[in-house]
Image: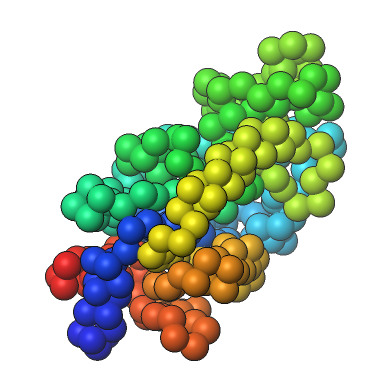
Length: 273
């Protein structure tokens, strides 16, 4: 990686007054979380699904909660346990350090459901989880528009990827499910994410006219919601984008693409700050 790229990125951060961190699944790879990129990446992380010929989108289908709840909670229970046990990598703390060092107003927008930004110490009021969070649950029906903390302990047989116990709704005692937006999902309760979106909107109003930098981390093209959001911010807020991605690092004209994983890219920038 050319030093001048890191130097350019560092110069933008030093001049900024506000920072928006946008993050996709690649942000978690340096913490040891699996890369679900393509069917082979998913099957490498979860070999039992290869035998079933199930892709990530197949496993993340809300219909399983109606048709085969043990299979459904096997997938999400395993991820819940993994996210609870993982330690956020150093990159999360570098971002916090920059925010303090340069007095940056900040907000985080992520498609990840793992809660790693909050686990690393970021204030929940400054995080917008556009696909929900595995650390919250709701009724499968739902019987009420209620979302509550996921305090469940889900035991998963890792050979079959089936849950040995099923979380229940605290209101009607029917099946509960994660408060995550799945593929083709008509029953996701979006109230929590809508509240986060409102806080994010107020933040954008507050920083209007200020020098804004977006640091995008590990957001791929397969589901391009984060990449699209980052580029829209560049256009609408006259902001600068630093896109850190080991493969999909192409950027619009005038922006900075860093061909690196999240941690490597952040550490590279740190050397010039």
